[in-house]
Length: 119
Image (cartoon, rainbow, N blue to C red):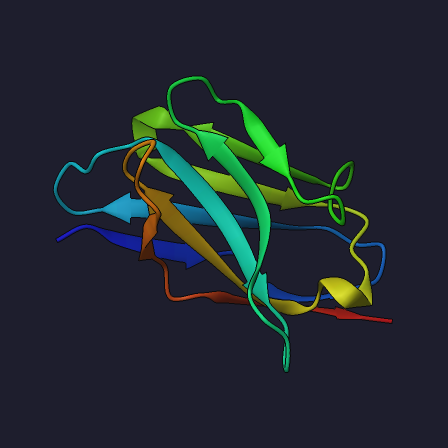
């Protein structure tokens, strides 16, 4: 059974930085892409960033472009999300998710990591 385990959330002041990590543990899994999503209280889950395992090509939501950086460590089966210039509106539970192929959806999810940005 493959699991995604997130770490690195916490409380930070506006303008500060945090780095989230998502490690895949368990048997070998099909690696196509990884994504980060977030859900703020009372809001729907939204896409934050994604990256392809093979090429490392990233994609970002407009709201985080230029502030967040997604990166991948193939050797450790780990994906990171570096979050800089954090804003109070970035406060949410952040989830990492795995996508196994081009035609697959994100079907494996982590437990979530709380990120709170104070003003």
